Image (cartoon, rainbow, N blue to C red; front, side):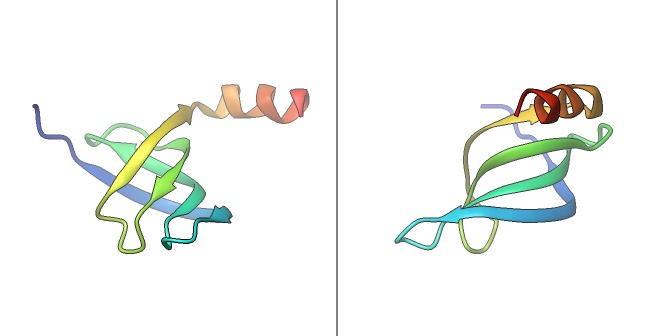
Length: 68
């Protein structure tokens, strides 16, 4: 599997926490050096492991905000 890099550039908030300490978070994340995007996914307590998630551009996040 190809290696990828990520950097959490802004921690926005925690949506929930599991009994094992993983948290579902909304952050701005830069994937492989690209422009940071809004990102919702589960993270291990040390942020070394992650679950599946969704990334949104600023425009997509604005549309989602309106829909909610």
